[in-house]
Every structure is written in C-alpha cells, then in structure tokens.
Image 1: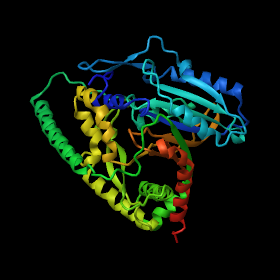
Image 2: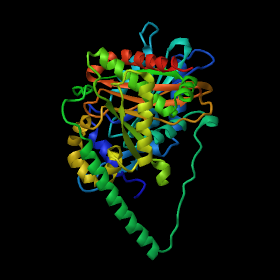
Image 3: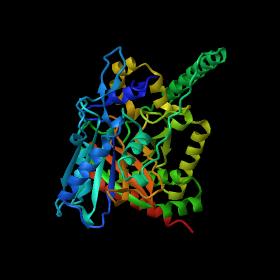
Image 4: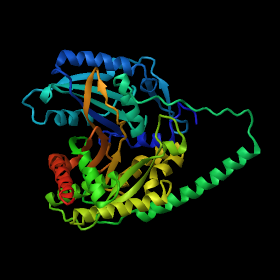
Length: 438
C-alpha cells in the first residue's frame, strides 16, 4: 500500500470521529526546569517546538478525503504553519488541580480536519515552577507507539527516540515462489478473518447494559495518577504475573471501588479492550496503525486483591498463548481487512455497539528508559490519554518512565464528576496490593 494512503483501520478511526467521540490520542508531559517558567518562557518554548515539529514530514501532512470509492490520502499541507499548531496557557495559582482542569477542556476540543491533525499546548504556572506540554494527535495518523515516537522527536536530541532506518526490499521480478507465498497468505488471512468475526459474534453480551455505559457527551475530564514502579515490581515478585498484569489488577480494583461509589454492585467482571501493537511482528515502518488487541475480563467481582491479580494473570496468559491474531480482541485486525468503503458506510453506526463488546480501554504506551528533557528541563512525569469509544465512560492509558508508572484517566458523561474519586481509587487499589506483600 502506498505510504500516503490511509489503511482501512486508519479510515475506521476517521469514521468514528465526531464531537461526542473525538478520536485523538493525547499525552501530558510535566517538566521540572531549574527555575520557575512563566509566560515569556512559554513563548520561547512554543517557537522551539514549532521549529522541531516543522522538520517532521508526518506532522506536515493533512487529510485529502477520497469520497466513497477512492481512498483517503495524506498530502503535504501547502500552507503548513507549525506555529499555528502550538499555543500557550498560564494557569492561575489559586486554580484547584490546575493541570487536570485545563487539560480536560483542551483535550475535549476536536482537531480541525482541514489542517494537519495535531496540536500542542504549553502550560506554565504549575506548582513548583514546573511547566507541562499537552500533545494531541488523531488516531488516524498513527497508533500509540507512533504517537510516542513523534512526541519524543520534539524533545531534546540526547533523549529523542532513535530513528529507525527504513527497510527496502527490491525485486526485479515476481517469481513463482512469490506468487505461491502471496496466495497462501491470502488463504491464511481469510481463515483468520473468519475466525475473528466468529469470535466477535460469540463475544457480544446480552442485556443488561454495562454499568459503564454513558450518554453521549462532548465533555471530558482527565485525571493523572503516579504510582511507584518499585511497588509494582515488589507485587510481581510476591504474587506472580507480569508488571502489566499487576497494572490491570490495580485498575480492576479501582473500578470495583468506583462502581461501589456509584451504588452499583460489581456482580460480574468488566471487560477491557487491551490494544496490542503488531508493528514489529509485521515489520511495518512508523506511521498509521498496526494494532490488534485482547478482550480481558477484569475481575471487579472478586474482593481479594491477590485473587484479582491471579485471575488477570490467568486470563492474559490464555490470550498470549492464543496470539494477537485470534479472538474477539483482534477486532482492529478485522477492521484493517475490511474495505474502506465499508467503514464509510457502516463504522459510525457499528461503533455505537462498542459497549456490547467491552466496557473500557486499557492501553500501554512504551517510553524509553533514558532521561528525557525539553529545552534542558528534565521530564519528570508522562501521562498518555486514550480516546473513548461512543458511550464509553472511562478509559486508561499507562506509561512507565524513570521509576514512575503514570496512569492517564479519560472520563466522559456521568463519570466526569467522579474522575477525582477514580484517581483516588487507583492509588488505594495499589496500596491494598502492596500491603499484602511479605
């Protein structure tokens, strides 16, 4: 497929997008400069980030719609002005939870489809003289791994993500072996597609409606929780599982507490869509989406924190043994194999059925272990933000960086007013597991 053509999965994210379900991802980086940053410093940072963004070919591209039959494409924006995508804001010192409050309003604003689909906001006036950068980029442009690579490329050079050399394979002629290999791949893909579709049908849940379903709303409330990576490692050593399993168990405990706070009995598990990157498996280059996923039951109905961790570990082990190309969680793979015209006709309607398959999204965004900085100011916190499917009330995005596990919460609808309580529940759930370590 030509590099400028949107894949079917990229197109699907465009089709879902609407004011009440914006499909942009986000990230919040908090930096600790050697001295407090103010408005004048923010203006200098904006110039620096605009200059660096202007060197990225990916960030210079805008969408060229193809209509019903022709494919959508990316094209260089002839009037591209990186400075128009970078803005500043200074919060007042008496604002309660100033970063989360401002980020919530900023992230709920959709991107302008007539321009390159990304924006940056620099926020100064934070406690301790710190500043933050808010970054949002449309899911059609890249997946979480690609977004992280683009964001890291805007930071200072020593900590920027290394560029990966493009791999080109030159063929002067198509051989019989090539044709036979392609034919087998088509047969295998068809079998996989049929299996995923059948698994999706089996995974659809009957009524009653999930307790996390909410009315459509353009409003969002984000929250940020920092956990100690050493605590996660200690829990893992004491009770087994992977670090990712521990995170899922902590969030399951938080959702259990959150449901009880809503006077909802946690009588059955909630189901999380856990995206899985398949870029390395397929050998894809950066850009676009290369995703599959698992549908993992979160045992919110289990009272014992260690019991929840063991249930999550068992479930994730089963998913990993089956692989990312099987099961209902591989719905992004199925979306990738449907014609783009099908997405334009049906995806927006089908997306409203997302609560029948899963209750929340929990994604992990990889970050390098190297120390990162912007204009010499060290990065001390990094919170990703995941978009919400229609009628979804809460989503989680997680990144681990320099001894901290950073959880970004995104809430909508009637869950907005409980974002603070959910953040507190994450901290309490982590503490409950840590207390059970010998």
